[in-house]
Amino acid sequence: MKHVNLTKPVVAWSTLITVIICFTACDETLDVAPKDQIADETLWETTDNADLFLNAIYTAIPSPVGSGDPLENFTDNSVNGVAGRYSSTVYGNSSYTPSNGPSQWGHYTNIRKCNVFIQKVSESTLPEDWKVLRLAEARFLRAYFYSLLALHHGGVPVITDVLDRYTQGEEIFRARNTFEETIQFITAECSQIAGDLPLTAPSGRITKGAALTLKAWCELFSASPLYNVTDDKAKWQLAADSYKQVMNLGVYELFPDYGTLFLEANNHNSEVIFDRVHLGGTALANTRAQNYGPTFVNGVARAWAGSNPTQELVDTYLMANGLPIDDPASGYDPQNPYVDREQRFYTDIIYDGAEWLGYPIIMKRGVGSKNQTDLSDNNEATNTGYYWRKAVDPQYANLGNIGNGAHFIIFRYAEVLLGYAEAQNEAVGPDLSVYEAVNLVRKRVDLPPVDEGLNREQMRKVIDRERRVELASEDKRWYDIIRWKKAEHVLNGRLHAVSIELENGKWTYKSVPAGGGTRVFFPEKNYVYPIPQSAMDANPKLVQNPNYD
Image 1 (cartoon, rainbow, N blue to C red):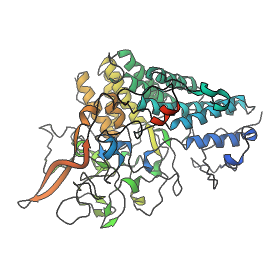
Image 2: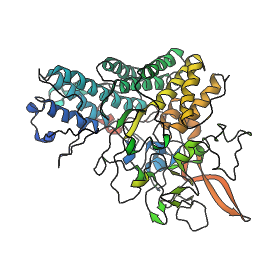
Image 3: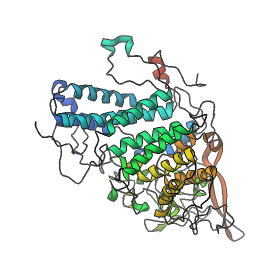
Image 4: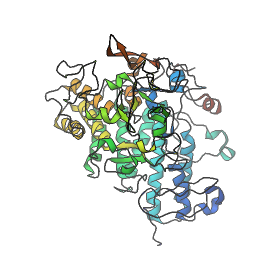
């Protein structure tokens, strides 16, 4: 049998030019024509051609780092600093309908491509070892796209065959599966393919750890109050056991430097389980520095500030001694609020007076700074008094830069540890393994261990705080406030900013409503997105989510 290299990096193509992307330090490339130049009958005759088709699916994995309005802005963690954006004007006030609502429905295009790949490769005479691995990758990608659909829309039609209206007619229309059935499909797929996937692979390729982590994540979401209304402990234990499987692989460990974990220089580090590859200088570049960094540096426009951390998030960061700011023993001074905070605060947040590109960023009002907090939401300066530092690489902080190659991390080991701790705590209470998992995450940033003797509810609060801070700006918060049914509390009212003004010769810090920070959430419908009206019109078997009619 012909030997086939199964460790090739992912590549992507364009209809105008062929773009060869090497996801690792290797110098292997594919020299094949774009798919639109390959006849279908020859596409499945060589592994190189078939790989090109699969790699194009890989590039469809969504990433927020090219977005001017990331999912983080749909939470209480951040607001968009640019006026008129969807997160503030439509989602934020819950004025959306099935015709203009947020949607993940477009992933059915990607799912169909996965189905085509799976069918064609299964029927092909390509080498068996290559087929086993690539079919497992395609099934993972299909499961991942289904997870995005299910976690946002609820149950959706689970389609695993290639639909063709010309030959099947009305049979292509499928009814929605329940949420439970959709999740069961995803987790079963992950279980079945895990043994066919390697423990390690070139950056961007799917591994056994990625499959088990997706399984655990979907189980955690399913075990949470939104869908686990009876608090069935067995569901929590199922998620804990899956996370434990990932921990027991012995492949992952926390990257020692939290501050540089997300930068291009540290792609594919020891903590990364599943990431979306970006290639600097191309249409696939990471443009986080241009989208989320400070708008003005030394009076020069450097970024758009499309996501500004809220005062609510800033107040969640602990003091360096491990105590929350509302603890009387913490040492927190509300009129000197940025002193002696935990390490993650300084690596995540640019606050008034913090340095960026060698210059102080001034958000004080009334001193002529272009970065003064924009409480009226009428310019591109911060609406909250804060900018993101996390994952923003200063060497690319320039509006004229076309982006860098830092990959967007979808799953990493810290999230596995916190997911395990949450599930295990809910299943059996805060046993020793729960403390160990949480304390590993805290130890990296020099926080003291969690106090011993906590009950389940107390530990739940600790884990929630750790998830919110550790995973800030990684598009995880939306899922947490949805699955725990917190959105109706934290997304009803006004999100807050800091206003720093001179009063009686002294700078005062006040929490005030943020520009563009008004939020409305209707719990009777907004815990799931509506099914797009276009999909409803096309498929008579679809039933709309409650209260969107």
